[in-house]
Length: 84
Image 1 (spheres, helix red, strand yellow):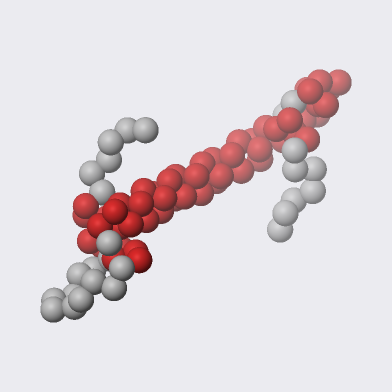
Image 2 (cartoon, rainbow, N blue to C red):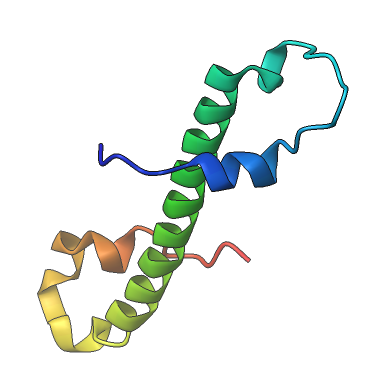
């Protein structure tokens, strides 16, 4: 996994309050980093889902041209019925 400078994201996700007492949980520094890391990973995977969706739509435009090879191309058969 590449090293990512996450401190600016941590400050945005978990702002500090002057004079507040740490309450544990997600306010501990090690948890802040983990929350930032998992949040960033979830965001990336979400965006990759959009790319996969676009690829499926583009591939389905060639479905008729593929002929008998359709069963061997999962991008054409993995979502026969639209989800929405």
